[in-house]
Length: 270
Image 1: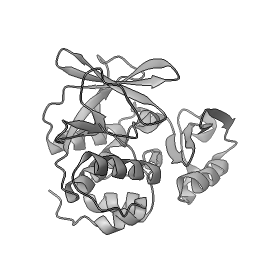
Image 2: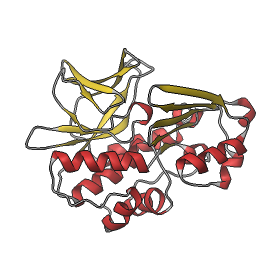
Image 3: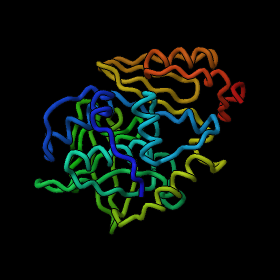
């Protein structure tokens, strides 16, 4: 277990959130929104062949001090430390992402948190990329919850909880979880698989998402989608330098190593 102290003041400065807090739904909602607005989703280190470490010192150095982003294991592990420092008792869980593949072949390689509250347990999932809910989701079957952009809900299938999202009027299955107890080594294994297994989607594709004041900007390989309210714009990145400029402008950090990024799904960038 890490003995690194959590720098709550540094984290508050990183996300621009200085409100007084208590462990309730209002605080959980406010800090989740601030976290997701400030800290983007990105898998650049995986494509650079760098280690993705989950110890608190490494996460604070990357996501807080260096103002980088990360993927689910990084977001959820950091956010767990945040919530614990605020008096919550978050419980980490693993899920199988079924957005693009059936559950029979999906690995348990997604991390999210369940948070007990007087109103009942809620799920917070800041590291789910473009389909992440911007508000806590009550763990109640069939209850639709909107964050102002997307609507999410859960269904039950035997002992499984299935997360759904409304994507442009179409129901999309996101992930499935039994909400069973997971040990710390389970998250380390899932993170290692995600970051290093040659067939992992995170090793094959560039995936970025950042929230903007009026919407969001998403990158999948060379395809860029900018959403402002109901308006969409799309364009294709010309080269790695264009990607570096976009990341510096919209994601809040400049990383020279982007100029040599390898993306197997983009032949000219491999």
